[in-house]
Image (cartoon, rainbow, N blue to C red; front, side):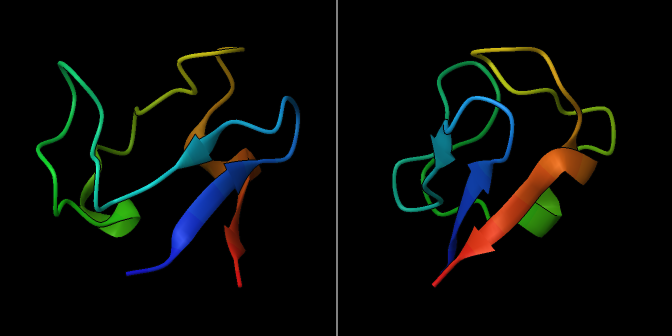
Length: 52
């Protein structure tokens, strides 16, 4: 699964790790709720880009 980076602050969402209180390990970025926000700076999913 691809990692996703916040284009504002650089936070990386790693689906292999998930995010405490939001997503279990193995949850892809696409499976996160539409109202997901960056835990570091608070921007929405639309400001994340897939990391190669």
